[in-house]
Image (tube, rainbow, N blue to C red; front, side):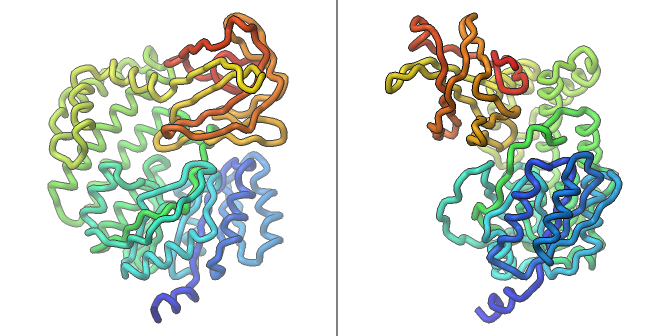
Length: 434
């Protein structure tokens, strides 16, 4: 216990890259300032934001002497994080994205994890989505070999991002590990591979203390073929970081690369870019059909392996199927407590990110933005005005439900209909106009 008590005194550098997150940044910074582990330095790097993010963090700096603000021209997230590392003085380093926020025990938990496991890098397998409440969980600290950590990362068993990890700064300095500024996509994965390759063991646990917020304006949420190509280049570069050859790592890398191609295929269809990038689609399809055996060489479930066979046989059909599944929106009309209601049920959106709607100043917050009281919804060809936003928000089977009271004809009651596969349109979802 002596070592853990000493660890409380060690400085932790919290680095936050910031770009156009004015809606989120105040909550993010306040969650860091409110840590129960007080010995932190908070390094905010404004990467040339064109909104009010810069002004907000300047004002926040006045409220906490531990906050350091750096403004720079827009150069990308890798450069921004490297600038933070340049000025970091902590024994340990953690990263938080500017549109996310953390539980008050985030830093103390990760310090305890890395000290207990006596490692240079430690991670948590779990994350909170949006405003999800953390549950009581045991401190199941453990370690895996660096090779196993790489395999798990490529098999998506641990997040590829840097914000669910803690790094001993000496490791980064001794091995000159920085974010490769040639990559703005898969840059976190590349950084983690470099760290894993430089150590023997990685600390692990399952505590959930980081809130990954669904920000539909985030660059990573919008399909950009150039960014995905950047990610593929980053993956090729990662192989040069492996210190020793291990077939398990190579097989896992090949599996991840194959999944990467499938995600590009889905993205092109979802963004309706089939005609503009017919050659890219052909390359993805050919790659998926050629690399059919890779999923059978790695430790994934039977369902995932079966899906891989179907993807190899019917890549385009499976891509369309996934798009429908991910975007499926259910509408149900019902009467409850004498009030006619429209129930909107949205399946999970994005990779690992659920939608947890909240009420904010009389507006219900949805995945594409906001819809106001009085906004019109098109239901069965009739215009019906939203009259009230109910606070009956709950979770069922990991899907989110929001109940909105509307006026509509009695004949529409008790009717269920599915808009699965229809592309969402701002500011809300299907059948909604300003």
